[in-house]
Length: 295
Image 1 (cartoon, rainbow, N blue to C red):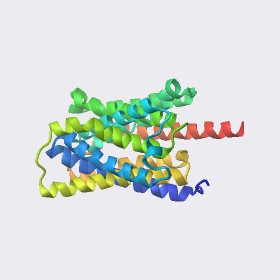
Image 2: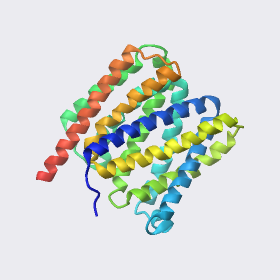
Image 3: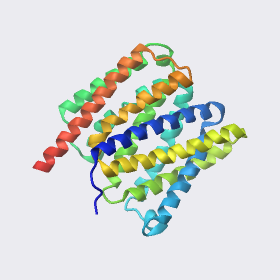
Image 4: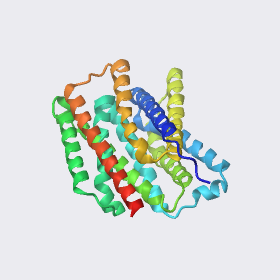
């Protein structure tokens, strides 16, 4: 039985997801500033792996069903991409700040559109290519003034956005044969296994207070993914995806008021261009999907 569609509920779930993601990123910045990023990401993925294993054990078919995949190599690649992307973006939070990192990372839907042709065989028309070009002009506006343009750290959010776009496209590809629960299981387990040797190498003592923040990080990481899955189960992705850009608003608030970051004018202008281009590409994708259904 399919889940009844409820776009209004889906929008509110997406907004809640963005808020939780923003809190999660603020916690990641705090912990990544005081401890090794690899150790922080490792503990987060340990909890994530335990979470997906517990979910799989309770689902029909148990762990055996969760392990079974038609794309084992691609599922492992997804797990490696996600853990690498999380590690890179947390370093970006520490080196560049939440606001500037997320302003650049917001270009990932444009990368998804650009890469959907060679990876998924989808046709990308001139309108979406124009939006992609405009979006990356916005990225250049974000990075141009100030110290960041001369810093190699400025490449981190771009690398992270590219990895996350590739991860998203591979997720769409494997979903043709694998269920969401299978994909969820593989990224949690593969990510935890991959990051553990590196995280243990950089292990250091954590203060009791920061163990509390670490626990909150783990809970928000699992909770945000649960909210996102619930969101997509009650509403079409194309209907709720534009609201995902609200995460940048929540991030800006946390960066400004909790970390004392500065919201530069070029970041506001550039992020606005990137968001507008991203929303346009999502809208064009929805138009194409509706046209295909009528055909």
